Length: 297
Image (tube, rainbow, N blue to C red; front, side):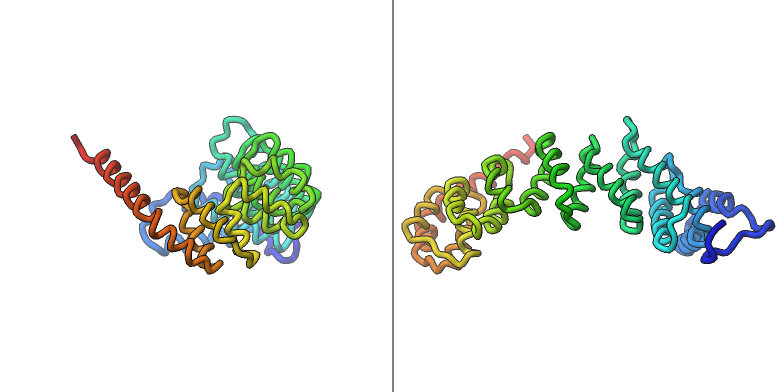
């Protein structure tokens, strides 16, 4: 028996699901048709909305979007047995081998996630995180980034060890305890982007000042950026040495920005006089080469 929030069907009510299916088979060539479709979906009872959901995922993408949004709204009001059954079917379908619509299935589960009871949320998160499929793991890791719980640290660590993927590393660098990161930093440095390195060392410098020397040896431009954010200044000698070793780096603009913030006038002039012209020539040669490659014989 449905709750009092919903109107019971009487015996003479037309089969709404069949009516909706027949409606969707018609040709829709004007804007109001979309409004009719959405209105019909919204007029379904919660049990009918679940029954209308096509677990083969042959339904039109837009119809599925309207429908899953409607079902999520129903769950927010009352989590019914029909919802639990639908969710179970979606979760069972998700890990099927050679399932062409896996992404669509995962999207629907994810769309329901925020309205579900905590127990179901925890089950889905574990399902995503332990999936053999990267896209599913990415969904779980994305949710952890926005709503971190330390109880998942071991799971994320296992994902990193097995797959060495960017997203799990991002979660580790952003969410794991500083002490852990200091202890394992040599493992993560080779896989981190320059942006991640900067964020990481900004996190760690307060608990381990000496760690900055490691960054200087690994990535001098990131090192310069971190110093800038810490309101510290390079010596002229160090600045010129970093410039000499890194003027060909694509991030040289970031290095010059750091020099500007540090008021290192002489180092900026050093770049302008000594390195700007060779870089300009190299750039023009590169562009000329690209044009030649694109020119038909």
